[in-house]
Length: 100
Image (tube, rainbow, N blue to C red):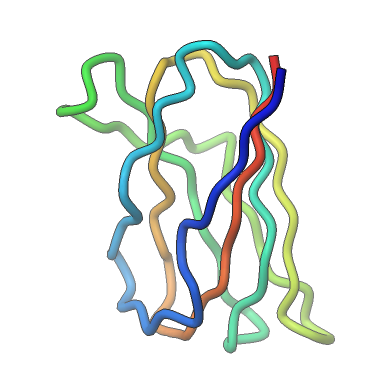
């Protein structure tokens, strides 16, 4: 099965801001994709087992394409919840898709 949603819609973010959490309990794989107004911007996945305490996944940091600011990142859902941490001050548009 699959599901998808939005994490940011032309949203101005400061470095260190995080998205709302996503419940990925029934899914094994995630992908985030979108654009960043900073051609050198990046995002990082944070994970949680309880939707309260989140930890940075240093293996899941994704960088914008320096030509157009687009990015795509794939990650494994080893914990039931995740968020996206915005690593740069910029405007982000970002979606996610999960599959089992």
